[in-house]
Image (cartoon, rainbow, N blue to C red; front, side, top):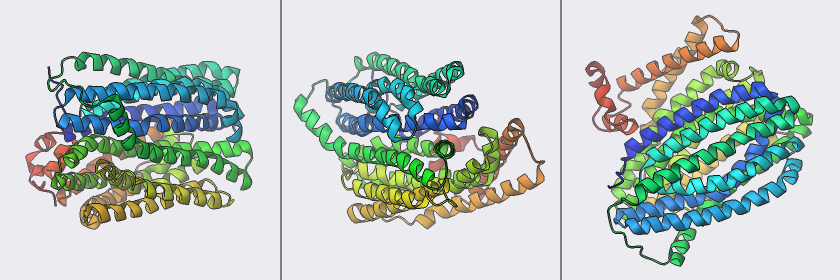
Length: 533
């Protein structure tokens, strides 16, 4: 039996649905956890999780993309045996690296807790330590299935992982919080390990079910040393880039908290403000992870087209991806800005400081979405080393801006959000320069973005108007219902306006969901162009 590959549009749809489901679970989980352990303890939990995210990224992210690219290259030449060899070698490497970092992470937990100003996070850090090794094994499978363009298995594993994570985290946090904040935080962290174990088991079962029945050349060309050398040549620059990004987050963690104290806050107050920043990151992560799903589904086809020298296909896919980025990111940013206050009350604790950060940071979604599309293009074209320069410069600028802005009493947490804008603009500009210099891929951003921007502004105006017309809500439940109504109105207004101004083509609709344009009423479909405008 041949493992049927999925088209880019189908892969994007699968990952988008999976991402949406996992993020809905996350959005339900965060306010519930916040209600159980309270804001200061939530800031401590976020601190521990940021350290775990750093360890996860440096052990997994770069090599996972390397596996996907190498498997994709070999499958383009029907070298099934060679693709499996890449996976097996990579799995051993990832597991070994993961075990090493798990041990280091466990032993370093007291020191990490001390430097972050959150001594109560030691237990959570030690519970998260073994999850590094488990997620390393999981990442090997996900890289393989991504390279095979079989992303449904990756998507299902993400849903199971998040579901188990949410249930176990909330249950353990609820039970252990009675013994104190540090125990509640440790209980919340336990769900990450449980979810990772379930995902690893699921993916290993799926791999065994499909690996033995593959059709194609079963010979394993190349020695293990050659495979490792090729893997390292591609993944080390990616690993440096992802590690640098997460290291920047760790520096931010220490930097932001210490500068908040300099601004006049107590350590407890700094943890509360850091909790506000974590909520802002959680809510903007919903549209951003959908865009990450787009880049994940796009990467194998871009890498394949690049390896075959089909640069016209590379240009076509990249332009389509950038257009879809605007179609999704611009209304997300405008919508979040207009409903930030309602969303804050419905999903979090209603603290005005939290709502202000969400509104202020909403438009970073657009810039970071563009940066994601640029980065996946550079990586697929083998320019991952050059892509490090914009990334590292952006991180350096952000750290400097945080140091200066967060310490100002009148700015504080808002300074961290402003720094994210500065970093994103720097990285975006330098990436654009690299693309023009090395790929000669001109792209008129205004032409691509103008219709989604217009439709988003119409939507934003309608949402502001509806909030004036609809009765004001007070409690969480009432604001939750109001938020749902506003989202439905926003989607309808934006979608209708975008279609009427010719802002989306049949190809773009089908890239979101295969055959989607056929499900639209004929009276509306006549406004949809067949070709991209």
